[in-house]
Amino acid sequence: MRSQHLIGGLAAAVLLAGGAAQAQDLYVGTVALEKGAVVLTRCDLVQNRYVLRDRKGERAQPVAGLRQRLKTLKAPVYVEVIGDYAEQGEDNVLDVIGLENLKAGKSCHLSDALGGR
Image (cartoon, rainbow, N blue to C red):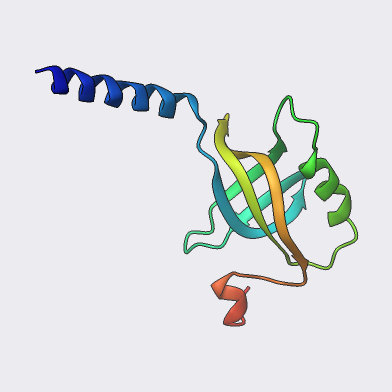
């Protein structure tokens, strides 16, 4: 009995600790400016789209910097986005923690590789 209480208590502690942490994922795709917003088109079969925004309360502003750079970079622009998923009205949104492997003139979309679009 005593070991069951100990195991149950440990499981509860793990669940509580896990619930407090936010999930961060990697989203791979291409980015473009659309009506002033930075939009990621994910490199998956459906080509899911996400509006990128800087995380509130963070000093780093990777999306603001990217918004300026996109004005001069050759499309398509490949990027790996580290962020948290959120919804804003009907839009899918990523609260961006960081941007990695930004490459102008590179696409990861199957349709581009096959000569589509």
